[in-house]
Every structure is written in C-alpha cells, then in structure tokens.
Image (tube, rainbow, N blue to C red):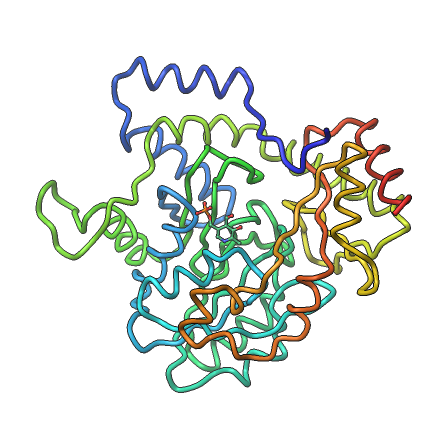
Length: 357
Ligand SMILES: Cc1ncc(COP(=O)(O)O)c(C=O)c1O
C-alpha cells in the first residue's frame, strides 16, 4: 500500500531523542529554545514560540491577541476543525466565508461583506500548503483594523510573493506526525512582535515569567524537549522534503488526466502538504476511493464536512449559512500521496490507477 502520508524518522531523529533521554531533562528546555530559533529563521520572523500542538498554538495566538467573548473571527469552513474550535475556546464566534474553488482557500472577495462592528480578526488557513491571497487579506485587515492570525498548520516553508507563511500576522503551525516537518505532536507560533511573543510564552506556561509568580491566567501548553529534539532533526531536511513534495506534485500534475488537478498561481510557493484533486459531481467518490485502495493507493478526504456543518457548531447555531463552494468541494476532493518518501514506481502507480478511474 502506498500510504497517504509517511513520517520520516531517520537516525538523526532517533539519536536526538536518546540524547534527551540521557540528559535527564525531558520537559521544555534548551532543545525547545533551539527549535524555536531555527523555526523563526525559516519563517523570517523574530520569534517562534513552541507549543504542545497546532491547536494550542491557535488557542494561545487568539488569547494573546486579546480575542474573546463577543468577538467575531472571520475564517474558512473548509479546514480541519481546530481552526474553528480555537475560536470557540476563547469565547468568540467563527464567521464562515466561502472559499475559492481554484485554491481551496478563503475567498478574499467575500470577506469584507462579513465584517461587522464585532469583527476582531481574520483567520485564514493556508490549506494543503497553498498560501492564501495575503495582499487582499492584509488590505482588508488594515482598513478595518483587524488582527490577522494565519493558520499555517499545513504550510511550513510556503511562501507568498517571496514572504513565508506565518510572517504576515500571528502564524500558527502544527508539527503533528504527518505534517511536512513533524515531532509527533507539537505546534509553533510565529511573530515579529516582541510583546505578543512574550504574552504567548506566558499563556503557554501558566502565566509565568518568574517561577511560581503567575501574572495572568495561563495553561500548560508547553512542548517537551523530546519532541523538540525530533523537530530539530527534521529542520535539517526541511528544504529537501519540500523540494521532493514539489517534484512529486509536478509529476502528478503532468501525468494525471482523469480528474481536475490543482493549479498554482504565479507568486505562490505551494509546499504540497496535500496533493488534492477533484472528481466531477456526477462521479462516485466512495467508489473511486475503494478502487484506489484495492489497487494499493492510499487516499484521504480533507475534509468531508465543512466546519459549519459539524455537529457542535450546528448546535451553536453556526450551521445555517450558505457556503456553496465549500459544500461542493467537500463532496469532490480526494487527496493522493505526495510525501517525500514516494519512489518513482509509486508515482507511476498512482498516475496509472488514478487515470483508470
Ligand atoms: C489546518 C489545520 N489547523 C489546525 C490543525 C491543528 O493542529 P494539531 O493537530 O497539531 O493540533 C491542523 C492539524 O491537522 C490543521 O491541519
């Protein structure tokens, strides 16, 4: 079976973990600090703050930007549920704006109509590693004095017109096991703002600056040095991983003819966390997934249900909004393997089987 994702765990990762275990210092420590430094450099920002997951990164970023009860945050319905849940955690309300079929990302042309006096932030998601149209989003944010919190969970190293994802607003990344750079479970917040970074560090660790003096309400959302050691080893290979994903996506784009393949706009540096094709409405996606599975090709559906249609958000009264593009794509998308460990034979099998659909 060619899996939809395959975490890379080499000798460097194993050795790095053993070194942490031998050091006897397992909690957040020097490796986390080093990992933060490397991550900030990759994003082209001053600060990176490591957290226990991408979800806690989003949660902390919203709190640190003072978003809370009664506030509205504009976001996309076509994403992993954490983007919306983090908004709910802080007592704010997600306001869903439809996506563009071509990019799978929030449609900037529809954002302004969703701004109200309660809107505090825009939370775009660089889905699959494809950056959002940040010029348009930053322009709206500036005119309405809104904070921008980027859900860059899937987009480490992606760039938009030469700038890295996570450097436009407060960036939030996931380092979950299947991500382009991973450490099992983990997250990162990126920012150029010294005060915001400091608030993030405090919220991450029970509001502490000085040990056992708690200046504000915080949480335990820290990363361990065991996780940071894995992440650091991965950073050495990030450029190689990204180049392989790009080459794999280029091969798939050049050879797949039976379904709608993804197009990337000029100036957008996609990092292909997922390679996602679309089946026409009249084709049976479940049958296609089964045929690919039977032929040894793993697939993923990211995501089968728009966030506003998930049970707990429907209960909050958020279900009743018309988002036709997101609803349509939720029925049509299939992600194919694109990870760096695919061989040429794997790529040929994927192309052959998809073209038989
Ligand atoms: C778009 C998006 N946002 C947020 C998250 C949450 O990250 P984590 O699973 O590390 O909590 C993910 C993870 O899959 C994601 O894909």
